[in-house]
Amino acid sequence: MTRVRVASFTISLDGYGAGPNQDINNPLGIGGTDLPQWLFPTRTFQRNVLGADGGTSGIDDDFAAQGFKNVGAWILGRNMFGPIRGSWPDMNWKGWWGNNPPYHVPAFILTHHARAPIQMEGGTTFHFVTGGIHEALDRAREAANGMDVRIGGGTNTIQQYLHAGLINELHVAISPVLLGGGERLFEGIDMRALGYECVQFVASEKATHVVLRRQGHDDA
Image (cartoon, rainbow, N blue to C red; front, side, top):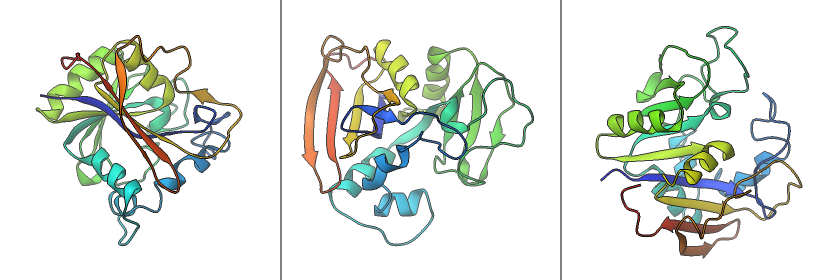
């Protein structure tokens, strides 16, 4: 059965999943690149994202690798695709990651502005969905063909799917940094009332990994 899950989403000690003032020079907001320092050195990130050899193993890499297993489609908020707001000024921007993005499966972008699909190298095709989170999930589930759908972020996108009770499992990495502002992941969300419980809690040198699972709602 297709599961809907979040993996390797990092928040600060004060709860922010992104810093303030996101733009082309600060894709995670000011200070946001301090968050995933646990992820960057891992063997999984080096191989899957940068196409490089080497990298670290251990707890952080285990969680990073788990996030890529059995994923048949992604859903991304528009900020995860690029810094452009409003209507598309042109069709030149094709994402943060260059010609070969790290998804390698269909990726569905939530937006209010229609755009034709973009086929990239390595198996990634970006599809732009204007009908909201339910349409995106329906299309992602169909594309995943029984594999999992991974919600890649950003913060607002995850919040929308949490409020709708559509996420089965959420892996959050808590980074030992303070941002002081930005977008709080759990702002206004009662995870307990939504049925989530902590099923795993593991610390590495660079992060504390928490897995939350929605209990008794396997049909989410």
